[in-house]
Length: 227
Picture 1 (cartoon, rainbow, N blue to C red):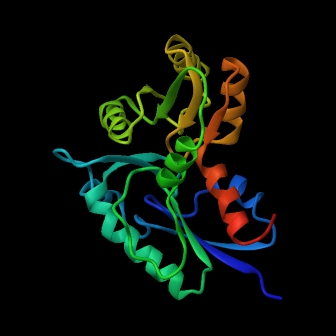
Picture 2 (picture 1 turned 90 degrees about the vertical axis):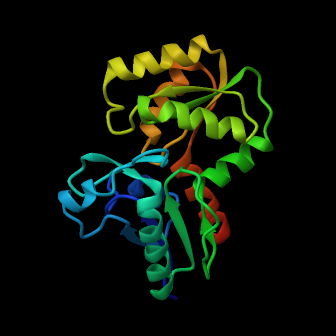
Picture 3 (picture 1 turned 60 degrees about the vertical axis):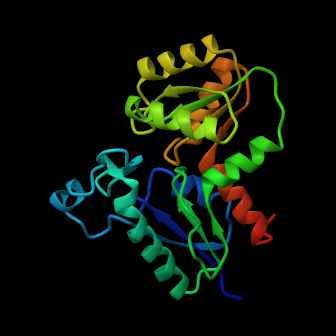
């Protein structure tokens, strides 16, 4: 029997060696095909996709492991093209590797959008304390706060870059801010956050912490009847 195949589309460049291996561990026997909206682009071309005006800011990872800010309106057509290309390669479903809010995208196979998955889980879950949300940079705080408020959540939004989460000082600042906000549940609102940081935050705060990439991987496993 051939392996099930799933697609994973990043708004940056593939492969996503920071998060896909952790996700793959929850998808035994599955072949993962990766694609990125910025694949094949050099630094000058990527710079032209920078956010401007009121365009939503996305932060993502490049193939050299550096991070970059891009505007959602610039990368959206490229994301759609990558989804279609992976479907042409026969994937059973596609996972979007970004927790940003996207308009409904056409797909011929199931498409998992992390932000919608997070919202669905939180709407079915009650918890003591305030919702804490980790967002990837100070630049993200206003738009992330507005997005969660529009979705009906009074979230305490705290910046922590998933690409600098190994920095003890940054993690300590984020922990202190979440504790001061009396967060009773924390959502790591960027696909780049990893399980190792989730475990650290859980130990520091003593409250549940949701990491988006693993939550989506578990849902993909359920859809593929792997569990």
